Length: 141
Image: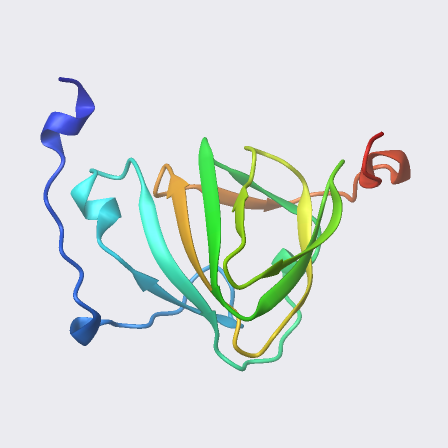
């Protein structure tokens, strides 16, 4: 059966939601228990703008050292730029499958921005990186 045979059933109830600090100080995070349930194979979290206005390293170019990252917008909007993909504005109902180690940066977000994010592994690292070359920032034809 593989690794999944050691996973645990998890039920994260909205009434017990705890919003915590996380990677970014301008966002609040609600961890949904999948990191515990999958023994660290995945993390699922709801992330929302908390109203703090602060410049941080993640607004600059960065990468996430992970094998899977999916973001689904629950509310609001945010504009990001991805290496080779250009600027894109994500709106409520949009979904992004972000490939591993792609350089990207956040440009702007609405005050009501909220997303569901699923990442593997749960303990992924984030690294600030140099901006991509100008030719790599444009959408390729």
